[in-house]
Amino acid sequence: MKFIQEFRDPELVEKFVNELHHITTQPWTIMEVCGGQTHSLVKNGILNMLPSQITMVHGPGCPVCVTPLNLIDKAVYLAEEKGVILCSFGDMLRVPGSKRSLLEAKARGADVRILYSPLEAVTLAQKHPDREVVFFAVGFETTAPANALSVVHARRAGVTNYSILASHVLVPPAIEAVLEDELTQIQAFLGAGHVCAIMGIEEYYPLVERYKVPIVITGFEPVDLLQGILMAVRQLEAGKYALENQYARIVRPEGNPEARKMIEQVFSIADREWRGIGTIPQSGYEVSEAFAAYDANRKFSVQIEKVPESSECIAGQVLKGLKKPVDCPQFGKKCTPQNPLGAPMVSSEGACAAYYHFAAAGIAD
Amino acid sequence: MCLAIPGKIKEIEYQYGGAVRMAKVQFGGITKEASLEMVPAAVVGDYVLVHVGVAISIVDEVEAAKTFAYLEEIGELDDLIDSCQL
Ligand code: SF4
Image 1 (cartoon, chains in turn green, yellow):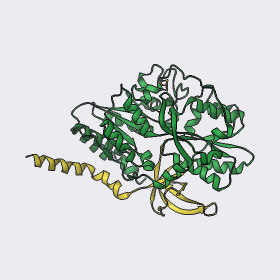
Image 2 (tube, chains in turn red, blue):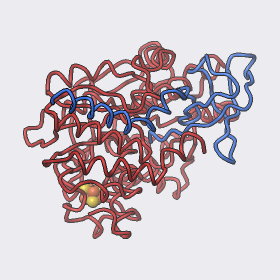
Image 3 (cartoon, rainbow over the protein chains, first blue to last red):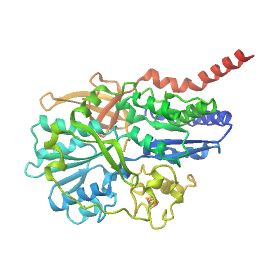
Image 4 (cartoon, rainbow over the protein chains, first blue to last red):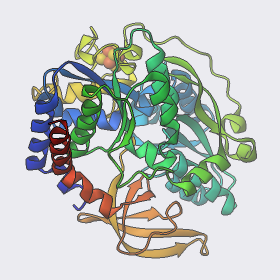
């Protein structure tokens, strides 16, 4: 497929790897923020191609993984007690809540559905005018325009039995939280390409300046990732820090203005709890006043008691890059993708699941 | 979650009484529908990056080619720097 295959070309991959070996003279620790990049790095065996001095640390960029327990409990409650048609993306259904996951709720008779796009949820609401349809709208900035569009579209079409349970997190405050942790070892970042396709790159300049770290906005294919790492290492080796854009075929400096307008219309920025990490100020979106009628939180005003996380799961440390999944005593033992203790073992973009799936092939160590 | 892949626009149509601009986008052998609302400039034949049913960016072919030239470019640049230092 065009714009995919060329970026997986083994010969080009080898050239980038060689160059990286050629220029690396000392140890460097780099974090890829986005779970999609973690998945690609592990799946394509890139971690094993890198010079031994380069350590890739996996960041908090898995929206499914950081969705608070309380919100999952709320979704389960809406599906079971309020009789709504609860829909979301596939991964979200398997994340353990304090009592059960959405998939378990479905097995017990709740109407829970997996959809490819939030726009399909609006169609579903049109088909079932007598039912309430709630879309569990999870995601980073990348997914926010689609979720916002579903709401705008519902209003345009006069659909009133549709709402979203928003669980939106933002990348720049998460990078800041990682850098503010005194234990952090991170010296450079690969920025999440698809987030920047929407938001642009402006908001990363202050982070680069303040923390004196290189940030390279990077794509997802093997060649993209290797080029991004190479650009970061070139800066590190030269003692420089700058914002660079490896992914310019997709990311314009200003992002996507239409998408940003859509987000601004529907969402406002708010403090957000990140599962395993805690509350990060101004790090998420909630549905704005203007669209209150489409906010499942307001529509159903459910109060769910907060339950503490499983003490055995060290997801918080894994998500901040302080520990690797294999450092977790439960990894592969009590915690597997079939029986996950924590969210990073559920989502294909969670670091724990990525390591588990590919460890068998000897890729992750 | 942020998975988004590039595909080629085969056809554009208006749905819901012209309110929504949708496209049939081809990814290899598969064709899927995507909203073009975020990429008003997109035309048939363009490659767009599609995420959860919404096209979020038009692929810039000139920029795409730069990745392939990158290693040669930095090679030349390094040569230039080296020769300046002599
Ligand atoms: S391996 Fe399982 S228990 Fe350990 S951090 Fe990952 S998700 Fe949590």
